[in-house]
Image (cartoon, rainbow over all chains, first blue to last red; front, side, top):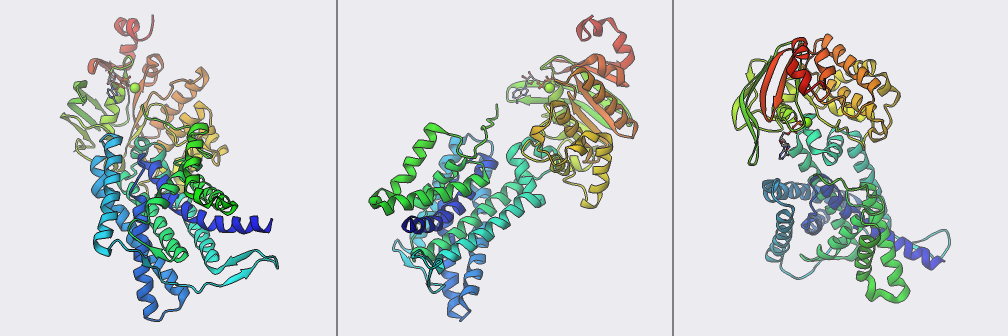
Length: 301
Length: 233
Ligand SMILES: Nc1ncnc2c1ncn2[C@@H]1O[C@H](COP(=O)(O)OP(=O)(O)O)[C@@H](O)[C@H]1O
Ligand SMILES: [Mg+2]
């Protein structure tokens, strides 16, 4: 039992990373019906920006928690701008093009970011600085352990989720985002600036992916230009599992996928770890294509 | 107040509006009637800026809005309440109304809510409810209330009585008259020509993208041509 709980805790940490990335997939899909395949690479860029910021900030002698917070803010801000630029330059000119054209463009943007990364940073993995010293804590006198990194992941994710909920449900731009993703034409008739709303969606999604990138770096201590591919795909599966377009769905989908994956590899099937996500994808597509929280998809006629 | 001159609107190769001209004067209710596919919705979409005419011009309050963005058209008080209600079903009644006032100063919101809730007391009772859970009639009220939140000087209504029970249809037409009496000019698209001609001052009849008849609503209602084609007797 304790072993199971231990794996659950580990799973939630991995799942939080998937969830943060999945939110960007799902929000962008919700608003312009595009699977943004470059999203995993924004996560990678976010991770690198976090790495350079953290290195610099630590070298000037700031305390670890401040280094973490400022690195997160820098990485999220720069990635938000990157997300906005990608949309403006690559997707916006294709607003009226076929979906497949936009999808292919997204794959192109993905390769562009990956190979720009290789070109600028080299293909080798880089060590991510240990921002916070790792400490282990026993939970309630049992043998279940939590380390400081897992606590950091949980705290960061919870804070970001609260901010996201606030933005989406309480602010004007959040309400505009929901309106545009429900019915773009009706939203235009309210006088909502659809282009600006789409930009905001890319900004928020990219910032969350960047946060995931920093957390990922701190957890696995190694980052490279191709690091976005697998987590990106898995987060996509998490978004589909939760019901693409649904914000709570992305969160639950991410956590669920992370936990299932960790439990399965802890049962001795660790070589199946990456296969789990794709088995899950196939199962959902067969049994519940709309996902756990999915609405009936309203296709425009 | 509104002057449309010789507009031609296309959907790709489909020529949906052909050299169409209409005017709406301040304070009027003008109705557009015509069979399905005549181009009524296309005209409203062109007025609100969702579609752009290839040629011709649209003037609102003595200014050309032909090439303006929807936002700036909405800001000037030309508000389009679309066919099929199009409420945001995933949001509450209150949030829908708030979106209707998206371009208004937030300080005017409380008074605007008050006005809409006075016109539609049903919406006040259901303000926390998701719009998707409302009945068809309530959704129509919400769509109209949402449009009122945008401070319309000219309100475009596209088939507000569609699919409603006769009693509700009466309600909706009464409210349109009230809204008009309180100073909003109305351009009303209706399949329900009988009712529309009753409350309107003037009317245009559209057929395949052209105006084929226009005039005083009472006179049109009495004309044999209209009785045969649109009033079913
Ligand atoms: N999105 C569209 N694409 C192509 N043709 C359209 C579109 N919308 C309407 N039409 C065509 O334009 C004509 C006018 O349609 P519409 O304005 O909706 O008529 P109404 O509102 O009077 O029923 C019809 O022939 C219709 O088939
Ligand atoms: Mg119509």
